[in-house]
Image (cartoon, rainbow, N blue to C red; front, side, top):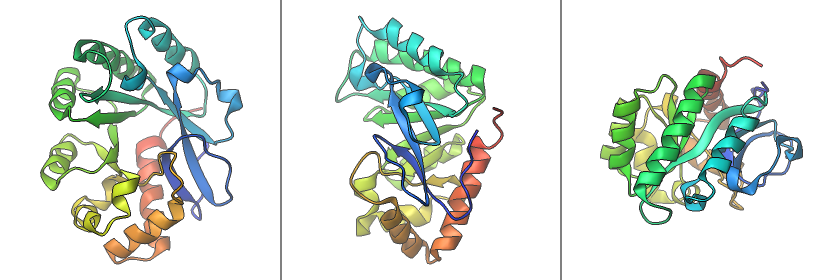
Length: 228
């Protein structure tokens, strides 16, 4: 698998990225779009079934799609997969398909990227039930410290929601979460990942180079043990 270089900024979760020198972008492929890895310009990608685009008629095909591309050496994680109580099919179907993706992630020894909206109880129940052998990373996080503590206690990593992390009120949460558990993302927005690094580095009272080193260490810890 491709690994980021020490001088690169890591965008751990993005959609529709284009190559930019100095940025290591991890492209998220959503199964319902049926893209093929050969179309990607990113050096690494994740793939999964987003609950927004899941229904009874397409569930089997989407699961097969994820299985079919899971052998690609640039695939570093499954997902985004998860739960959404505001948008998506029945919670029963969301549970079923989430479990399938978690099973695939475990069989590949690859982390699982989580989407969760107003359904943390479901996520925690699933974590207790599955007892996953691979780490989970919650993307787009903007919750309170108490929720962050629950995620951290289960060994999860956190990537901040892009529209939240650039606001002044995010600073306390940034400083609260252990540095060895954080990632940064653009999630397909127009925000430059370098601007996010600048904001977070200021929040932590460190330089950009040190923050780069932290994120790269986290990346290598979470993904670096994989074999091509």
